[in-house]
Length: 350
Image (cartoon, rainbow, N blue to C red; front, side, top):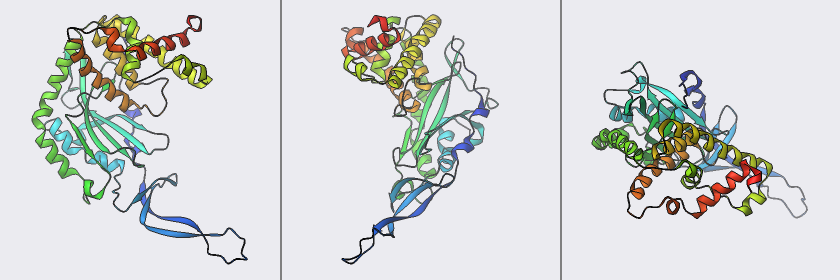
């Protein structure tokens, strides 16, 4: 059984609250010169219609933005989560929650904060789709300083024993705001969030119930242990062919081996605990999504967790069709990719 312990002290929110500001922007423009002046001198010309989003600690610029841009700091994004928490978790506020996870890119331009209710409030607030298998809901906050991600608030679920997270039906509880003055407004989005959350309160209250039913439904479907690697390739959209393998660098080969080794290792653990069913396979997928190995920075944990959540509903619907065949469902590309990942683990097999 894969087990992990949540250690709140390792996830310090203050690390994400570094100072960021909008600064005046200038550009270097060649100076006007006469015919006989051969110098390459330049002069700084102000660009009043643009600003630079700057990390004040590192003195690094994240992006150049127009006058319509509305800077939202990670701390503001965190504080504005209050109305979402009040709607999703009745009679709760931000002080009742602790940081479950905080992820930032190496440049600190993107940030993802996951919050769960503190253990001292109402126990752990867990629900149990199966005996001795607790899950807990969490609120995810996504923000960026380089215009690559909107400000976003989502509801997710985490299996408490192994701390695997998944975004389930993100379209149901998913508040998104662009970094513009018209979207965010001068005074922030607290009122907009409160209004949106109150409109969705009925849907929010039944989301956990739908999630439990989905988990129970997965346990009724058989997925052979031998196809889980191919399933992971399908779910996470990983393509590997002979041509790609021949062009891979040593670093890329090592990353591919790390990915395949983790999937194979976790499959053995979860199938030993839950048997050969889709619930075991789902745990393999969410474990990898939460703790990705062999992935570059493009496929972050939030992205992978969302794909794992989307797969749950897709597989449940497809597997109930009378003509369902696992081989057809996986597809030739995923099966081929799994074969080549296997060959990298055991070069003799190729």
